[in-house]
Length: 76
Image (cartoon, rainbow, N blue to C red; front, top):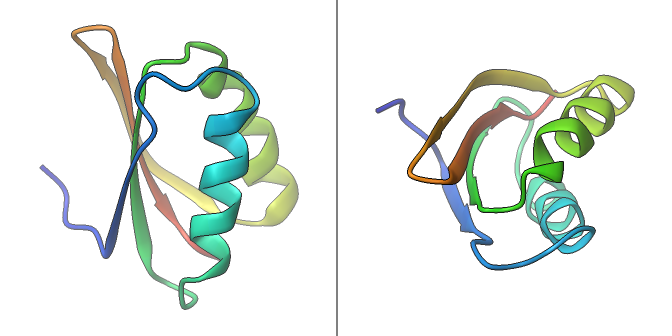
Protein backbone atom coordinates (compact mmCIF):
# COMPACT_ATOMS: atom_id res chain seq x y z
CA UNK A 1 0.00 0.00 0.00
CA UNK A 2 1.18 3.50 -0.80
CA UNK A 3 2.00 5.97 1.94
CA UNK A 4 -0.47 8.76 2.62
CA UNK A 5 -0.89 11.74 4.94
CA UNK A 6 -4.64 11.60 5.44
CA UNK A 7 -7.33 8.91 5.10
CA UNK A 8 -10.89 9.63 3.98
CA UNK A 9 -13.34 6.71 4.07
CA UNK A 10 -16.61 7.70 2.41
CA UNK A 11 -17.87 4.14 1.91
CA UNK A 12 -21.64 3.99 1.72
CA UNK A 13 -22.08 7.60 0.58
CA UNK A 14 -23.62 8.29 -2.83
CA UNK A 15 -22.85 10.95 -5.42
CA UNK A 16 -22.12 13.82 -4.91
CA UNK A 17 -21.02 13.32 -1.29
CA UNK A 18 -17.72 11.43 -1.93
CA UNK A 19 -16.56 14.24 -4.24
CA UNK A 20 -17.61 16.98 -1.81
CA UNK A 21 -15.92 15.25 1.15
CA UNK A 22 -12.76 14.70 -0.92
CA UNK A 23 -12.67 18.41 -1.87
CA UNK A 24 -13.06 19.42 1.78
CA UNK A 25 -10.28 17.09 2.91
CA UNK A 26 -7.80 18.07 0.22
CA UNK A 27 -8.38 21.76 1.01
CA UNK A 28 -7.08 21.18 4.55
CA UNK A 29 -3.83 19.63 3.33
CA UNK A 30 -0.47 21.12 2.37
CA UNK A 31 0.75 21.03 -1.23
CA UNK A 32 2.44 17.68 -1.88
CA UNK A 33 0.37 15.85 0.74
CA UNK A 34 -1.29 12.58 -0.23
CA UNK A 35 -4.94 11.88 0.49
CA UNK A 36 -6.09 8.23 0.47
CA UNK A 37 -9.81 7.92 -0.33
CA UNK A 38 -11.97 4.81 -0.06
CA UNK A 39 -15.43 4.91 -1.63
CA UNK A 40 -18.12 2.49 -2.77
CA UNK A 41 -19.67 4.93 -5.26
CA UNK A 42 -18.70 3.93 -8.82
CA UNK A 43 -19.42 7.49 -10.02
CA UNK A 44 -16.41 8.61 -7.97
CA UNK A 45 -14.08 7.20 -10.63
CA UNK A 46 -15.36 9.69 -13.20
CA UNK A 47 -16.09 12.53 -10.76
CA UNK A 48 -12.64 12.43 -9.15
CA UNK A 49 -10.84 12.28 -12.52
CA UNK A 50 -12.65 15.39 -13.81
CA UNK A 51 -12.15 17.37 -10.61
CA UNK A 52 -8.47 16.47 -10.21
CA UNK A 53 -7.68 17.49 -13.79
CA UNK A 54 -9.44 20.84 -13.34
CA UNK A 55 -7.95 21.55 -9.91
CA UNK A 56 -4.36 20.59 -10.71
CA UNK A 57 -4.05 17.68 -8.29
CA UNK A 58 -2.43 14.35 -9.25
CA UNK A 59 -4.04 10.93 -9.12
CA UNK A 60 -1.05 8.87 -7.96
CA UNK A 61 -2.85 5.53 -8.03
CA UNK A 62 -6.34 4.10 -8.26
CA UNK A 63 -7.70 0.58 -8.00
CA UNK A 64 -10.86 -1.38 -7.25
CA UNK A 65 -11.24 -4.27 -4.82
CA UNK A 66 -14.26 -5.87 -3.17
CA UNK A 67 -16.65 -3.25 -4.64
CA UNK A 68 -14.54 -0.46 -3.15
CA UNK A 69 -12.63 2.17 -5.09
CA UNK A 70 -9.28 3.32 -3.73
CA UNK A 71 -7.60 6.61 -4.70
CA UNK A 72 -4.27 8.12 -3.71
CA UNK A 73 -4.35 11.83 -4.55
CA UNK A 74 -1.39 14.20 -4.32
CA UNK A 75 -2.34 17.81 -3.70
CA UNK A 76 -0.99 20.09 -6.42
